[in-house]
Image (cartoon, rainbow, N blue to C red; front, side):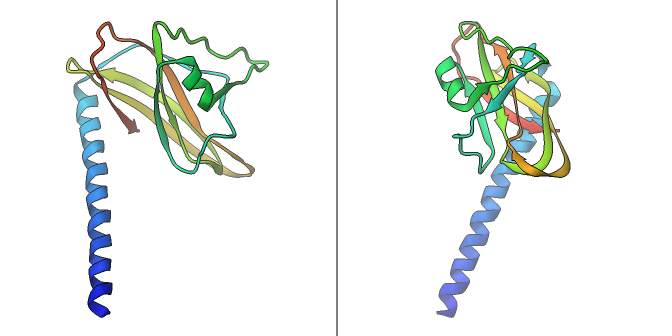
Length: 161
């Protein structure tokens, strides 16, 4: 019984270490790509919210290329500050990051979007956490990016700065 417990503990530790290495490798790759990539134009999407029927228990990284899929995650929120940002689905697609639901005031802002010649993109964003609140929120940010001229597959990395 003791050997089984030790074996399970070591197996779990190995699994955790391997997944951490994979995460660190991706962070390292994103940072290296960010260093050599060139900035591209993007439009920050304003006046949207994450729908309340979306599972917000874990971080989600989204690449959305049509209105129907976008509306499955986001709703429009016209405010006194203006209307939701228009998205031209024929010419643009959306890259978004949704953080887990929290009771802490949290803002997520895009920093930049960069791309390399070999179809790697880095979407950099900044997360700012504030005070505790009496209600919960789902922090997110989303940007609209012009679709590339070619139909090659683009590898997208997310980098929190």
